[in-house]
Length: 280
Image (cartoon, rainbow, N blue to C red):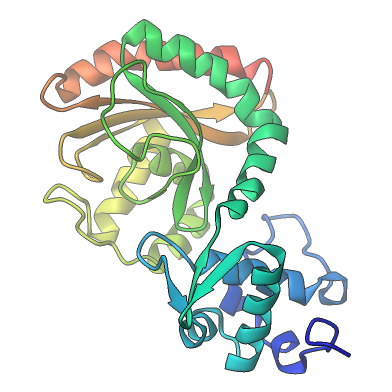
């Protein structure tokens, strides 16, 4: 029996919380534990341990980040390397380009990005500004579609990038769609780091901003994620009223004031929102 066939008892016993498993949506029962494949769950957690701040990791670091024993981490890394998703060099591990296939499978098969992308193009080229759409994933917003319209205002405005939800317009729109109890629980888990001098870092102030977003139906954020970046966002709703994503327009602060951003871009965003609601 080789290393890939043996059952790793300790790895199977690792708690779900260590792997960032999200709770099931409110009102929807979660699966039974016996129906879950722990090995797949933990293998994906190992892939997720690598990011921009940690592009190369040792086996011990992977074990620590994923709540695994070192022996279990070794088996997962060996398996991922065998499958071509990980490469190693002197005890350091890194992801390979093959991992991009996982994201491409979503982008090529999911209905939401394919429906939203044409509307983003129309919006961006009408306003001559960059536009993108994103969904909430834990603490972050993941961009699922984007177009620059020739305006490169931020490297975060491209499919697949992740940005913190607390300091972005798309993030606040998506948080505003949650019940207040979930918003409070989400805020309590956050480290509200000051990414710029304008970033909101007070939990109470963030609650106020999310409540304002919920009340007015849009969020406008002034240079909280990046200096020079101003963004306005609206929710994308299904015909039943469920918020599926958020859509924004981003501009450079040197060219567009906050008042101009709202006055010039919000009507076009609301028009695109209404158009998409009929097909979502």
